[in-house]
Amino acid sequence: MKHKHLIIFGGVCVVAWAFGTFTLACFWPHLVNNIYKKAILQQGFGDGPVPINTLYTEPQKLFADPLHTPLRPGSSKLMSVGVNHDTLLVVGWLDLSKGPQVLSVPDFSGRYYSVQFTDPFNTDFAYVGTRTTGTKAGDHLITGPGWKGQVPSGMTQISSPNNGVLVIGRILVYNDSDVSAAYGLAKHIQLRPLNDGQSGQQ
Image (cartoon, rainbow, N blue to C red):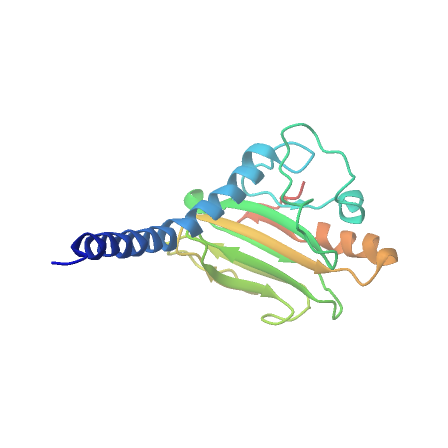
């Protein structure tokens, strides 16, 4: 057949493209999530690694000048490269295998904020914040798969499909003079184990 080799080559290219697209679609989200996990638990953002089940708030100095604020060698640059200048970040990695965590948020008095919960496959499965739960203070019980306990009165349950959870909080900063106020609110977004009074903020 005339041009048979071109037909074969074209077929191989199509198969390779389809396989590559499928592989990228399946594994890219997991890879991105692992980058965040490594940044949080191994590198940190200038103050050393962030312990599991602890939230880390972006320092005011880093928010004000992300490109010129020096970081400890080996620190992740996820908070200094390609970030916006509208929201202050709060990040953490949860391990729910030993039990639920309680997320406490302060009263934001109408200020925009969000706390995003993402599973290891980069699926955002829940949000706490202005557009979903409002801006009043509240406690949210984050439970892993298969948890059968009783949700304490006054708490809302967030059921995670996986024991590993990436947490990303964003707090609106109105202007440069508002950074301190936003930072104070961000520091009051806290984690603690269920039935434990100690908070998890770094």
